[in-house]
Length: 99
Image (cartoon, rainbow, N blue to C red):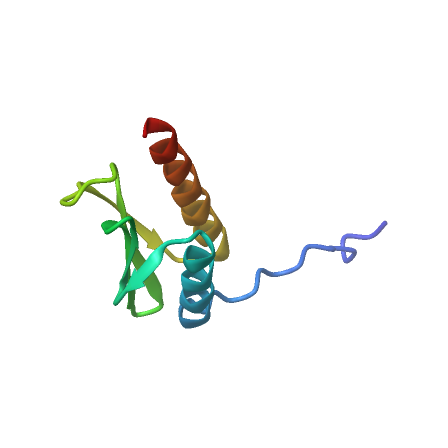
């Protein structure tokens, strides 16, 4: 086998605007209510999203509260987008178990 037989494929470019649309759809599928740039569960903010120069800036509530503390996440790739969705699912499951 020669050195020219490199089968690695380049990763597709991250299109933040298209990723934001997909991310919003996923959050609605998780039964979160959309309120402007934020998503809520039973009237309490869970996630806030903003698009800024090719990056999705997200704020994710640490606990389900009326005035939550936030974790900030910058989504710059599809892998980071999947990681954010997984984290939202994990926190939603934890909050449902706490009730």
